[in-house]
Length: 172
Figure 1 (cartoon, rainbow, N blue to C red):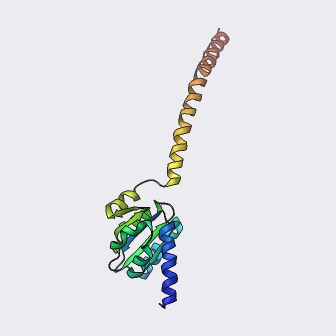
Figure 2 (figure 1 turned 90 degrees about the vertical axis):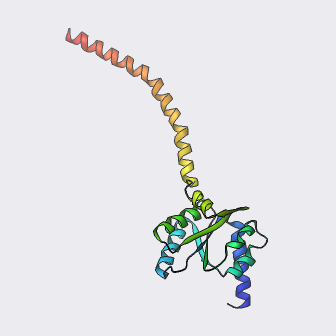
Figure 3 (figure 1 turned 180 degrees about the vertical axis):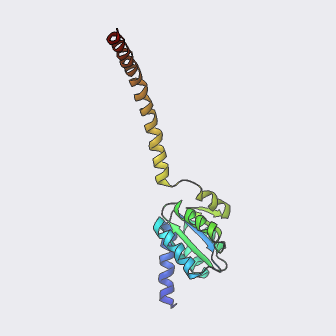
């Protein structure tokens, strides 16, 4: 990499660290190219991105950002997974790490909070924003459905009683 390319890469990575909802740092030593391509495509489909960066350049890019506390994670062969949604990157990384033992989560950051591997794992278990919206909508709709059922129940019971009397009169 030439000096200008490095400068451009650091600037781009700095913007990523500032704009991302969450960043996950992981080791990928021993992962094949096919596995990495599969990982990148899964992350892209979920709305995130995976980058392999030189540790020195990543540490420089972290300076002046909220995620500066995670600079000690950049040792060895590391990759960076990030997304604007705080749940997406940790969820995809942890799902992929379950099936691939070459991906080892080191930690990450979410805003000003530096996360260790356990925090990333617990963040990955949270439902996504769309799932939360669906649950909330279901909770709002359920009482309305129950109220409609309770209001309609006496009328339907009256109708059954009238129908029973009508059948009784017809039989008589």
